[in-house]
Image (cartoon, rainbow, N blue to C red; front, side, top):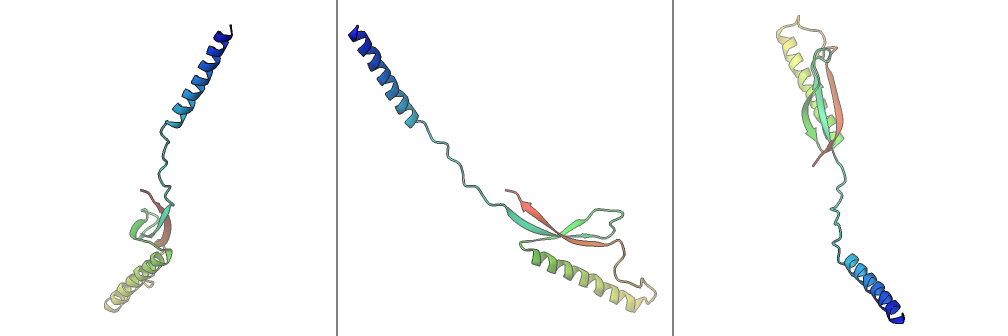
Length: 111
């Protein structure tokens, strides 16, 4: 009886050793580095928001850069209007139509 019990115990210890070794030899799951989200800023313009959707004019790394592009775009339209106004005095009285829209939108850059 003692030999049978001792064999059972030795089998149990061998099984425990096998389980431990099989657990230690399992490959670890490597998790890649998690990238922080990167944001860009779109400068959007819509010449007629009642009839169409806004278009992306330019993309910038900073919000300030997108806002500067928006101001430059408005200044270009103003200069065109002033030039047109000199040539044709009876053109529209105001450089911007009521249905024009400018804006800056933050967007996440996906990998």
